[in-house]
Length: 514
Image (cartoon, rainbow, N blue to C red; front, side):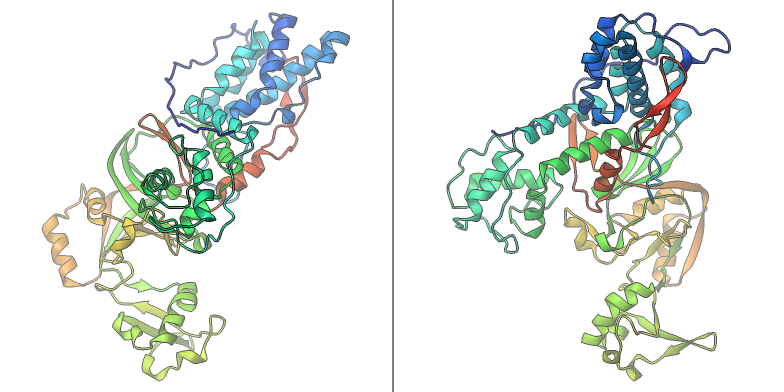
């Protein structure tokens, strides 16, 4: 059975905050009794909690009482179901996962969620299942993401999609014949693309080429139709991993406060995009290059404070040992040709060393007593402009001489810093309000002299990680390049106990994770 995964944006309906009965002054909403809910309504609530998978949550975490208890002990059934609903409501409003290491990009605002008011309405509602429904649909884009989540859940239930077991180290070229891999490729694409109906022909024909390009576009890859390592890897991502990305996307959106209105820069790392935003409007949008998987760009909330023209590059020790040393061992002349200078620390002072006196072959990544700087210039790895945003990870944004890399779909090539597709446009926006104009900038750049310019007002910069967005009526997904969604999903599935307030009154032990 094939699962067709179409990603529509469902029409949004207004979601209003809870409007339950007014509370007497000093009343604890968590101590109220759900006097309005009939036993039938409690059963409907239990049925809704059993469907929390629709919302990306695991119903088993909420200890919903067994249906048999309703007949033998209706009061205990009511109390237990309401306790379970309270725990689920908390996770739906605030997010189940908090405090992941390094994830400063996760935004939670418990005050904005107003859990006490929702708890009060749950306790007093004649139909508490409807309160759960509204809370589940509250996050931005929730309905659109949940619609696609339902399709992936159906795909998992149908057995997922087939794995390609042929040699994925070799590139499959359009027009070629491969009796093993082409039928496997067809079968895999047919699981998500209704247009693929021929599952046996071993020739990589035009119809299959179109399907491959559609798949590459959906993954944000280069749409060249060549099936190389990157495309093979994307094809073999299990459907369960994609489903988890959608679950994570839902949970990340929960408990967020009001959207910022201040002018700000946001970089979505797995989408390789930078936006300069004013309110909800993007006044600048460009491609970026981010850190490789082994040198990941960290998630940050910082402020851009200045720009530097013609920056020199103090090569980080890891780059010097792992990247430049092998290069100089192959070609010692590359040091001078690239504008690099070699230094050694002697009795606390930095002494420049003539690279022609150094036998680079005598050193290794574990034994390299020098440090390297690269002078400003056309070959400098930072290009002509560096955007300074002080942080403990030494991360900044910069120009780059490697312009050809921006044509690639997957752009995790750097050692952690952000390389900009159109740095001059960002420079113009950053220097607004200062005395710098285009003519002055051009003169400084032409001089090759290093010079800094403070911004008139610092700009907030947020580096964040979201592999799922909703744009233009479509849910768009990108590969989990750093595996952060997989980490989040493991936390989402962790059945760590927490203390929750009972809708029947008092406090009890629940099983929602934080």
